Image (cartoon, rainbow, N blue to C red):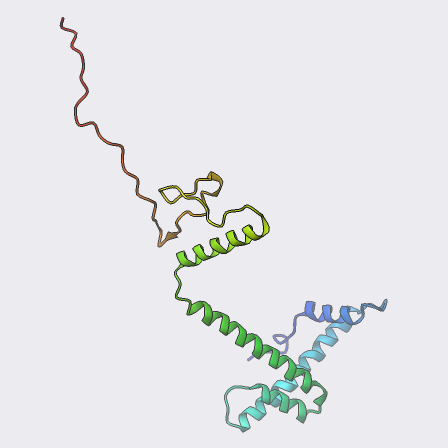
Length: 187
């Protein structure tokens, strides 16, 4: 079981909130006063959690929901916080929904990494063409798939996949089919 010393709130966070509320005034908060405010905050959270837990137990549920918290606030007489709690809850739900949509969109993208890289390059080139006149939208390429401009050599380097680098194939230099002729010195 936990003791009362184990339960606390971050003192730095509470100090920051206190400083924000006293910012306009030339008033400082003593350390023992800050500790007392931390204790009051812990007590408030414990009261709400205990009441919400009792409501959850009465409904034979195993998880405390947001409705249990708002009902606990009503029972304890803190109805002025309910609107703010509901606003924060709604913004949290919206954020969760948005992050799930982004994750699903990325997960369901059937385009390969190479296609995405090519699309990105095309969009960058089009953007450059709009902002800088006389800029070609396609980069000239050599027969080996590398750019003709050495400064851009790393922009189209094939990506390393699974630890293997897929470099373009180069033909080895031709071998001489006949051995070199040496002149004899027997004359």
